[in-house]
Every structure is written in structure tokens, then in C-alpha cells.
Length: 317
Ligand SMILES: Nc1nc2c(ncn2[C@@H]2O[C@H](COP(=O)(O)OP(=O)(O)OP(=O)(O)O)[C@@H](O)[C@H]2O)c(=O)[nH]1
Ligand SMILES: [Mg+2]
Image 1: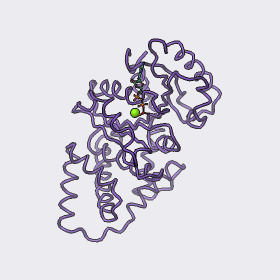
Image 2: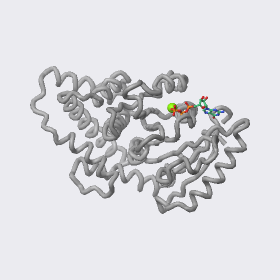
Image 3: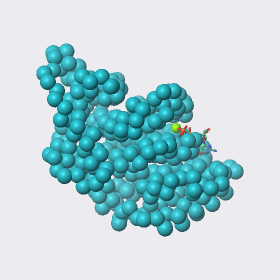
Image 4: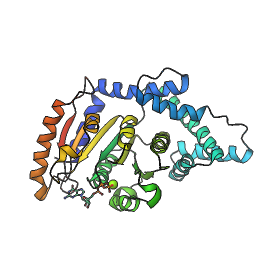
């Protein structure tokens, strides 16, 4: 049992075309909605549609020569995969400055156009796969992403990691911790790690994370991992933005099932029991069994995909 298990499931999701198309169909539809004003079909789409549409409808006015140069430089750098330009572009979408926000939207529009062209060239196949990873604080999310991310880059993928932490807006949050826990991955040239910007509100998290995902995809990252701490509503927002939503549960404490919101378990495509090593192996097995039976009782989200429960250890595999 280990991250390779999850990789296996990921491959199965990719291979299991109905799920792949159904779930990705959602994002493709959303894009159509953004571009062509097609009616949104679900709340998630509406949210996604709103965040982009509101931005795209903003009146840009004339770009100054300097602004045009900045946009062209960022766009060129981004689509040719320059990390510095990706970083600068994400900083631009984080900004609260009204004019810069408009510039950011103009950039996003270009990146979306570029992505649409790329997708047309590849026969309509989506270019990237988005995975959301959520769980209580200290569940082992970052440690897992470190191992899993290395595994993905090792098999030829380009991986970007956005760590959404709603608490980080005032304190700097777990940024330092996350960086240090992903030391290997942060040195990997095929990976890009970034704490996803927050502007203190859930709306802010949703918008900026969504936009950062689009930018990462534009920069050629074919797997986007979004880590979110299980506090407040952020994981629900993230679950709506991704193609696969993974819930990570540590085998500690007593009432595990009680502690995790039922709604979020219903959102999960995959439940991973973490830290299944040493003394924690036995409780991990127990919790795996609990979640397996709990999932059977829950409402099914998809006709073609049954959520799985697996266990892994970032230390021993
Ligand atoms: N035994 C064991 N410990 C682990 C494993 N994965 C993580 N840990 C420990 O659990 C603690 C938290 O790990 P993180 O990966 O930072 O957890 P996180 O969910 O990203 O934490 P936050 O981002 O702060 O919510 C660290 O002290 C890790 O060393 C594992 O597989 N086995
Ligand atoms: Mg973390």
C-alpha cells in the first residue's frame, strides 16, 4: 500500500473514460459557459462561471504601451513554461489593485484562448488533470504530495502544487512548514509549488485558486494538485474546481468518522488513510474498514465511479 496505489487509481480514473469525460466534461462545459455564455448546469459551474465571467466582463479600456509589454512578456513566458513568469502571473491574479486585476483578467483570457487552441489540436482532450487533496490539519497531506509528486514527475508529468490555506492571509500560515515538508519536490524542475493566494474570504480563495489553476495549466503543468486544510468551507470550494477529490484521514484520535463532515466525505472520489506505518498501522486498518462501510451508505456521486478507500504511508510506501 502506498502512493503508487493512488497513482494506480489516478490511472484508472484516466482510463475509465466515462468518469474522465463526465468529470472533465464539467470543466469543459464551464469553459464553454465562460466563452460562449452557455447556461451553467450546476452550482459548481455557476460559481466557476461567475468568477471568470465577472472578470471578463470588466471593461478594460485601452492598455498603455507599458501594460501591453508586461502582458506580452508574461503571456509569452507563461506559455513557454518559464517558472518566473508563472510566479509573476499568479502574483498578478492575487492582487487587489483594480487596474492590475483588469490586467490579470486580460492575461487569463489569453491563457484560456491558448488552452482552447491546444485542446483543439489534441482532439478536444483536456490538457491537465486536477486533483484536490483535503484533510484535517496535520493529516499528512504535504508529506503525501511530496512523495506522490516525485512519483508523478518521475513518470514524466509536470506537477504544480497549490496549497490553499485560508488561515495564511494574516500569519503566513503553514507556508514555511509546507515548503520544508516538500523539500525534494520543491527542488524538482518538473514541479512548481505555490501557496495559493487567499484574500481572507472564501470568495477570494475560490477565485484566486481557480485562476492560479488556469495559469498553471497554461504553463504546461499537466497535473495540478490543490492542497487544502480541512477548515471552513474551502474544501467544498476546492472540490468543485477539481476533476478528482481526495480526502486524507490520519489514523489518530477516537471518533474519526464523527470529526469529518459528512458532506465532505460525500464529495470524495478517493479516501486515503495516511500514516499507515509502525504503531499506526492497526488503527489505520480499522479506520479504512470504517470508511469503506460508511461510504457504502452514502449517496453516490457518480454512476460510473465508486469512491475507494485506501491506506498509505509517506514514510514506508
Ligand atoms: N508516521 C508517519 N508520519 C507522517 C506521515 N506523513 C506525515 N507524517 C507526519 O505528520 C505530520 C504532519 O504532516 P504534514 O504532511 O505536514 O501534514 P499536513 O496535512 O500537510 O499538515 P497541514 O498542512 O499543517 O495541515 C508531520 O510531522 C509528518 O512527519 C506518514 O506517512 N507516517
Ligand atoms: Mg500541509
